[in-house]
Image (tube, rainbow over all chains, first blue to last red; front, side, top):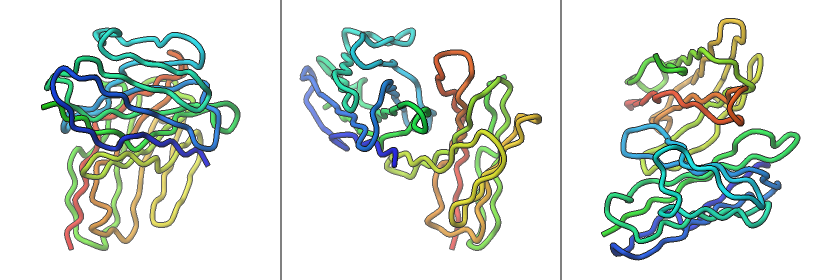
Length: 116
Length: 110
């Protein structure tokens, strides 16, 4: 149980385009989803926390207009990197938390974004 | 000082050796996670602990709440165990955000 998937697993895009990354909880309802970013050889950095049906809470220094987060259902959250630039190239990881036995963070496999 | 400290930062061992990675934390927690990240990036949750000990295959994780310390052990290590191992804690205050250790890079040579 507690499987979290991400799609796509990797994406290459041109500078100026927008990219959407999906995070799904496959076998539980995720009341909260977390989006992380990881630079090479560094630990995960929390970008934002989203609760189903409400606006995401962004960490200090993260541009909410740049990184749009939608948590429209209890099994799906999306992160859209708008007008991507090469400095947005990174590894993006989501995690999901539910209720009861799922009341902890379960991680997705990550999405590697490369902006040319 | 970081709230979560891992040691060692880097560890190289020969195949078959018994491996121990340590994690100490300084905050109140509801749970501690051990994560594995292979080259290429994908993160796998190995264990989630709030007390005692858990075992899965060759992996064993222990936690001592009083001492605020956890260990991850790998028995009969294998080159495929080479990865970065990350300790993360769910802090009681702060919307259950995770605080991450800096990771331990493990290399097992054949």
